[in-house]
Length: 169
Ligand SMILES: [Cu+2]
Image (cartoon, rainbow, N blue to C red; front, side):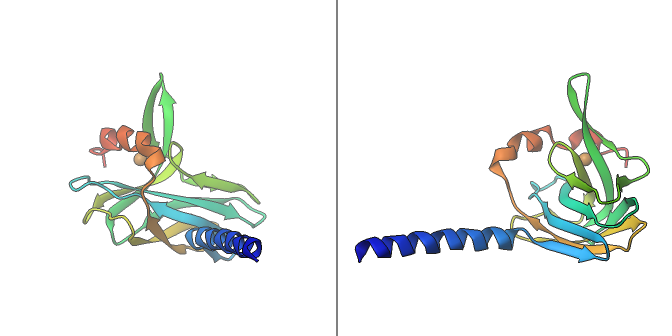
């Protein structure tokens, strides 16, 4: 009998973690565009910029381009990409928008493409949800919520920071 209890406990524990990860991985879908797990990071007080990460899936048979985004939390949102230039990590804006090919997937993630939330009204806090509207060329706009989570594993990117390119906007 004891053995059975332990087994049941193990099963329910693993079910709990499955449900937890499903709850974390929120998704949004409008027409042929699917947005997976939009998230952001908390910002220290005084930091005027935050980030936005998400996965864009294009289920249509034509290219769709992410051309911009808006949020009440920031004055301006730009699309950036992190690149290596002469061994130095830098960020640059993605000119002409971010194209997602027919049937394709583009991931906005640390050290890659990302959204830059510029001129934040107030610091972004862990646990909050940030409403964000994604604007596309070739598809309807999609409203999502960035869930703010801190990832200790990624402190490198936080250190690299967005301080170098703040003033030109
Ligand atoms: Cu950036």
